[in-house]
Image: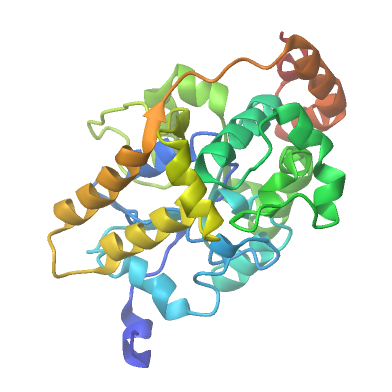
Length: 320
């Protein structure tokens, strides 16, 4: 526990990557970690804000602000201190809660074709143990049951995320941050741009954060599609009421805050555990029929987002 006097002196975040999930937030977090003017903790996704988010992984820091601030105590004079919690975007409360914490903070939002985002999130949940339904179409059909608290795994760490369509309503989510912080303090990145010109997009982020934009940077691929290496191991983990994500969170927190072991050994240990559980594979494409149905369903929301951002995103629902 940090003492009261220490709480007053511990560095605090002054910018947030608030989502959306599966839109490049992990890559941006890790690129910013390499910037000399930025401190980003090894622990990603603390979700200290967003009191309406439902799931065991969202309860770890809320009642213990000193535990949250401990994530940033290794900052050493960097002008920018940030954190990344991609479920802040879908939360109806997070924007107001962050504003109450620091009304002058900077906000970064990353968005992607919502159909691709939903499908990628379902695949990630299958890997992490949050999702028990083996068919994406069936998982979509189960949303009404899940609103009634049915067909949810006991080990589910992110119940909010099982409402896949709700996650995709970007035109309802982004305005909360514009209203709370002003458009000038909110940067919206489109994943298409981030992927096609990563260096240019990163320079834009640096300019937004008022840090040097000419720092040499290696832009490697982060967070590719993953699957469980051993199904039996996942079954053991989830049958205990746990999940891979909660295990990773706990190990990452120890790696971030435990000071007796050198940092490089702490982080390598966490990555070794995850690597032993993981295999990488290309995700099977959505069936054309399901993609078209979701595109039609989301077209109105995409058009509203296009108007909000003054950018034509209609290719998100017109492409095959």
